[in-house]
Image (cartoon, rainbow, N blue to C red; front, top):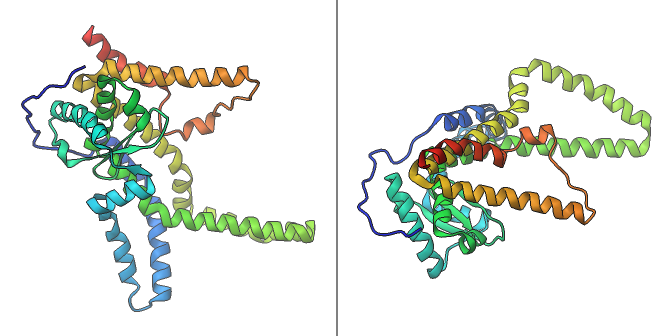
Length: 312
């Protein structure tokens, strides 16, 4: 597939927020409220007269998801990306210009990054980050590389990337506090078990009713927090299908189908090699499948079939 110069007609609306984006934000509300209560409580304990200031700063910090220097720091130091070399940039830019032109978006608004990985993958993150693995850049033909980039652009134009990052950021204090409580509980039970089984049983008798009482009393917070990961995973799978549909609508359905088929074949080949070597293959159970943020390859290929038939 060759990419020549073309006249670009930019859409008036460069990006939006589709149903999966709204769903992601709504599902993160319980986590945000728990984090807000934690931040505000600690702030007012440490600064009785100025407790509102750290809370307000934390709420305002979400805007950093769209701050370009912060995004670059996030890409380099959190995601482990690097800037492409001149040769890599030339190849990426050609495919990206074609994708942006077909989508009617300003491709210069996004930053292209490279992940040093031997896996076939790509990413959309924050407000303007599009990353591909070095393996993808080195081994995918032009058309397939463009299809992968079109999929990631679909995450950005649909609002999936920024909503996921904001949801993660605002629920992070609550998740860290919950992880700390679980760690402390494990240590307490470990210490009491060293003394005697009776001490452990007494601890269960004391803490068990307390935890049950809090769970029942605050069910409107506890229940959403418990089921949110499963609902978020379901919304994530829907956003992947929407990004596939975005790439297909731009004319990349055959190339994207080839990429997904390659990834599916590679996965099955790895399982077959492990079985042949006498290794145990761990397939995800029902709960693990429900927590997966990506649909199965055969599901994604099935949803691409209408676009493939149109071309036929």
